[in-house]
Length: 435
Image 1: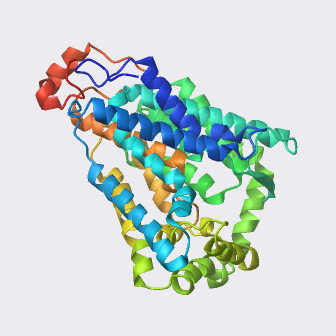
Image 2: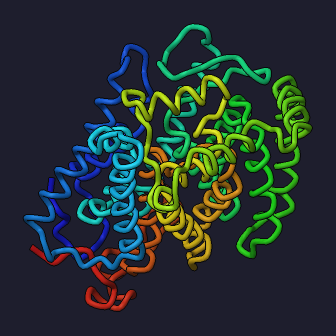
Image 3: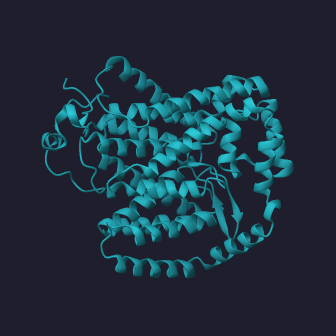
């Protein structure tokens, strides 16, 4: 492994790229391929260990070499501080040891990748292509498992529900971000390959049976199509989108009808809906005091009395922390952690970026609209890798050390010319010094 030895952020080091791939694959636990068993936990820890090891290595040997201006570092450090605060709070108020709580929230330490990625210095367009590949691989595995059911090709939890087969496969954040990346590329510069990949990702989300996701996969691009000033052939794209939606309705009619029935049944319950009651329960009945509300109650582990108590709530009352979105985050990690994370998400949709990066805003808008009724993407290792990629792409743009191109397009001109246009290494905030 090495730091790129040029003044450009665009590293061509294959070893650096391999490390990024390994960390990302560990974050999705190899998609829980059959035969893995409980090895997924080992893989998650391995990915986290790779991040920590190389971060320490590069920090020790290349301290002061990085001249890459960060936009989000203070907020990320605060997240880590208050994550530790939830560990201490959990031991003090719920009797679960700090070590057990840290183990239970091991996925969240993937946020440390934020501090490692500048050393690896991948090209922004390589990151975008990599997101597409991860999204496509995950979606193909999902579709294959759907049609192979009940035969298992993955250890992911799965069952029949809402007229479909629900498969809880890791890596959803890659598939979702990849979908909006494809949409953005189609709108800006229509290319057939992105239409094909986008169609696969859209088909997969219908198969999942998640009503809110299906609706937002259609609604958000439609709004973007209508309001964006950068879209060419707007009428043609809109016509094609309508035809695709009509075709999808007839192709997946039974699934859509089952989702509609489920939505009507749950909406009729109003305040008695189980997710509403679960949110109220964890906020008022389970949160012991203001300190645990601020710092969190900690992530429960079934190996402790605290964890067993939470499991009993899930079994007896159907109150799952994973069903109440940001309220679950608030309960586990505290009010301050939650507010910092919401600040980061709002920052992502308000910061000015070139049209090629608008897919980040589309993705974050979707997550904010889902924030009360599903597991937040940042509560997962793959989701945090995706979050770091979004931070990195934006920071590349603001460092001015290379244009962020449409995924798959070659960068024009050499690195020295790009740096000259950006104002030179000192003004552009180049990644490393020459060695």
